Image 1 (cartoon, rainbow, N blue to C red):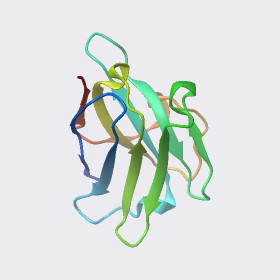
Image 2: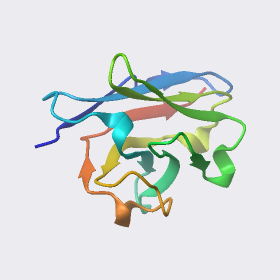
Image 3: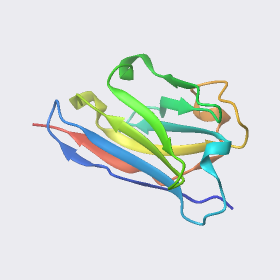
Image 4: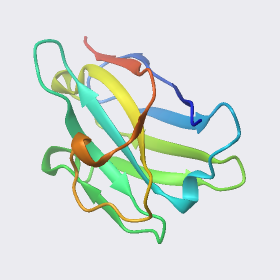
Length: 126
């Protein structure tokens, strides 16, 4: 059973940067073989897609994250990363790592993902 664990969240001032990481704590899931994604959910709002990365290296981003966020994998460490630059107060949310039990990422939507982490909080405030 996959158990995704996120890390790297925290508090940062507007314009700052953070890098989130995700791994399978049970070492049963090779992340690079599957579609992986980052999602976020702010209080009172629905969970929304941030970025996805499929097993052949194709990535997709939500419009508001393009040019600021970068999704990547460290195959040696079996981790999924999200580099977030130029953070804004509206980026404040709980960020979740997710895995889909297929190689492709047809949608930047929570509905096509099968496994979820517990989330890591990102707060952007001055």
